[in-house]
Length: 289
Image 1: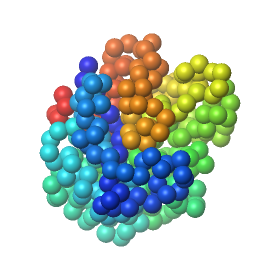
Image 2: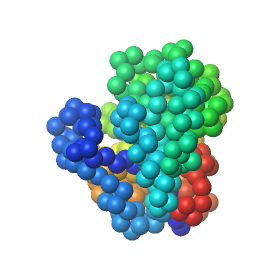
Image 3: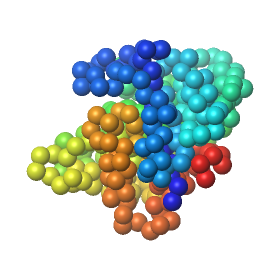
Image 4: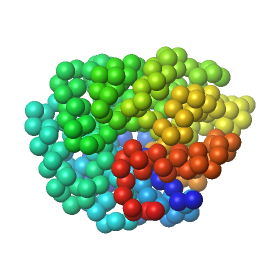
């Protein structure tokens, strides 16, 4: 069935810097251009006909460029962009993005809280005001962070029931911590799953290699099982996290891992994870159907 890749990136380091790529030498293979044209054949081979491209830097130039990719009506169907959530004119900024070429494809906003020293950044009053403006604009908000950021994310989601929160990469649990779903991730993740306005992405972890001596998916099952039990297929969506995922696996291998984990679900449940949830949450149009 046609699928949606609900989380991937593009960048061209020769045109714009990606400072986060310089933070770890393990990221060196990513310090080059990755374009939609590079992703397209891999996506087509896996039956992916629509995608959501996600911001990588907290810079105002990036979102208009991502919207322009969606304007061509091909693979990219939705955009998760960036704005300064604390800006007093955030409503006007969001309205301005909607007026740009491809602006109708703006689906959500994301701020990389990983760059914020304060783990409670998401519940600062100025940030909550910005998140309320995102909700008023009819957009979702993607949460990307480590387990230490999840309690604040749960607090923010609880205070803003009108805003749909999307938890990227299942909250980035530490897959090496234990054979079971690890703390403090598990408790905070359960808090988020209990909130009806939170959705999660089965992404990021799919390219993580298994522990020595473990089966190929043994390290993923505890986290997938926890996510499925908490969110259900109707609030889970697949994302490749390409090209970051290429550090550990090919695009085909990432898709194969997701399909293996979900093999026991019904066709309707798999359709939700691989297409329906993303189309509903991000209000994707007819492109790629």
